[in-house]
Image (cartoon, rainbow, N blue to C red):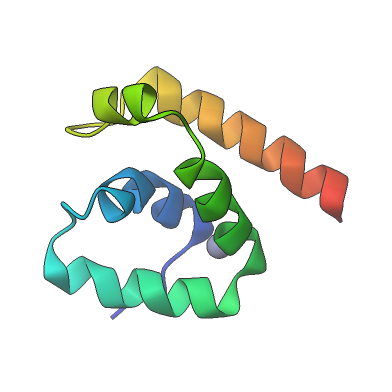
Length: 81
Ligand SMILES: [Zn+2]
């Protein structure tokens, strides 16, 4: 099994939070959360996103939202390090 990257984590995070992620995808994400503080914080932030927004992203996160999230993330990561 390949190691999960932060990028992949972000891709799957919406499904993870909404618990629609296939069960075989969850263990790598749990493992990544244990070793990656950035993604832990990101996940905590994501869970604070208003439900109305999350409902929209429930089925598939639109690409523009993903892109915005990534920009937000990379900015946050830069400011923390
Ligand atoms: Zn990560």
